Figure 1: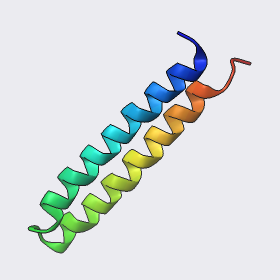
Figure 2 (figure 1 turned 60 degrees about the vertical axis):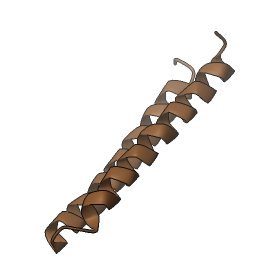
Figure 3 (figure 1 turned 90 degrees about the vertical axis):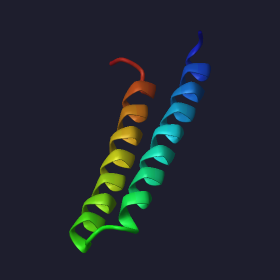
Figure 4 (figure 1 turned 90 degrees about the horizontal axis):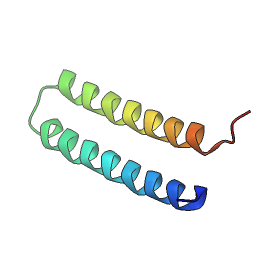
Length: 63
């Protein structure tokens, strides 16, 4: 498998993970107390950062 198709699969898989986390977080964010809402927003931000960081690190050529 060449690098371009690997990158496409990583982006698609990352988008699915981010969408799942956002879906589950909003499910609990609407019912919970303010503390849970802040934690849910932090969880969304952390997952987006980690997924993007992982994709960027895997797409760089080995140096």
